Image (cartoon, rainbow, N blue to C red; front, side, top):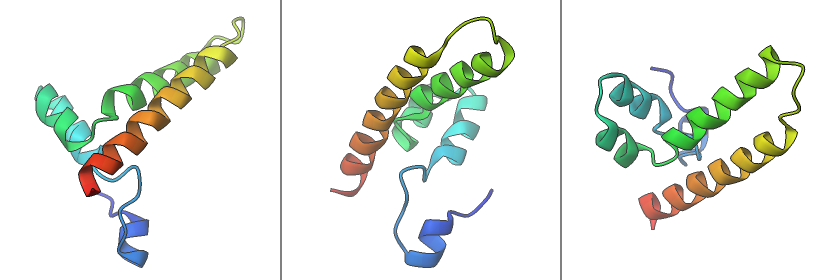
Length: 86
């Protein structure tokens, strides 16, 4: 797995730390473990999926959905980071 550059250089975990391990747990079918490892895993995958549809389907406007899912994902990332460290 790729090491976190923020943690390596500064010793502080970033908002994305745990995503890789969580994704591997998800691929193994451990949905609960994936959520406990990184609570934003599902919203991140939803966001990335919507971005993928945006690149594939140029006929539709996904701007509002992308912004909404980005905000939701950001909230999950910040709240998950808070509960993990405080």
